[in-house]
Length: 504
Image 1 (tube, helix red, strand yellow):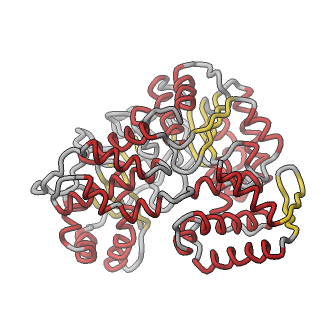
Image 2: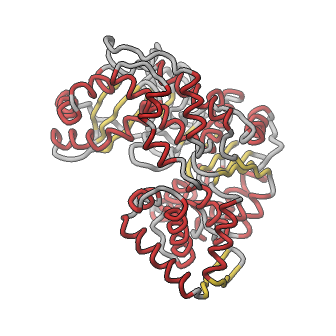
Image 3: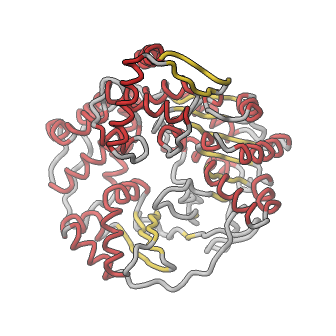
């Protein structure tokens, strides 16, 4: 049974996108267009939206990260305005016999797929530019909004406990872990595990009523329900589920009204013996400005951390990702394939990129893209040359994620707070120290630090570092509000504590 939180809207007839693709080809060059778009992307335009279908999620991520501005520019040249760009997974391009059916949502118990059967769940994709609506592949039951499954999750010592807990939730009718709270640094696989659980539960128990969404979506829809006087309908949709999966739950920090609403939602589902799964950048007790009631609920179940992957796990991740990318048709029928990625190259990448899974995948993708463009065989020499700047930037003496975790734990804020535009005293103070320590301990420039910290200007980083230096020179008393109340400490003592935490 499907439980969706959007209303289905009629679609207008599609527009001819030939002019857009021609404009894109002119912007990026014929060779790049042939390799990345000509045979492996399908453009459709309707209702002020430009959809780009590709064979798999990895291509969607690559195209969005490298060509989004060019696509927007080409569309604006032809249409006169920039439409919403949505990347979707097109099963036909991936070789499947049946194309994924776009689902714009339906009321509870509503919409059916093109195959005529009732859909089995609902997914609200975490808000970000380029994210599309939920899509169900009628041949495999895969929801495009939930692109990740446990079958593609690489298990190692750093995530084995979390993985086993996820399998238990899927396997058991009555989960032993409720709630299951998964936390860890940036890019270590938290969202992958959360989406994998949703897929696994749907496959094991098709009649399960489930809902996956980000905490930001929960907050936005709660506010909308208040404004439109549809609060009861919102509550029914959120609470009448067998499985509630919330990503980035740290987003609820500093939102007391939304926290209160979520607390009641959590209690209703939990008391009914249903499953709640939560994902966050930080341990519940380390999420600043989160109500004590919510913290107590979150720690009442199983709280498990995912660490950064070890060398062997990184090798396995590189190998799996490279195999998938090389199976994808990166160019037209005349494009020469670069062959499998040699084990020597896999180990080279895994040894030198140690921060997180996304950095690993980015390095592998960069290598495969270069080898395809140049029609060359992958080699260690090529990896050394192509990834030199990537490795220098992503593998500093101290990792940015270590700095953010240490600073966040000390000041009682989360990495999400550090990257946000919030300017409260505690968050600003933590952000300044984080920027200062990142400049001191990594090879990142001020511009790179600014981009990492939420696309902030390099001047913002320079000002933050100057403020910290002035505090240290005068060793001033610093005041801030932590999770347990008001805090005060000398600037040099704060720096010494943070430096010690980073070094561990």
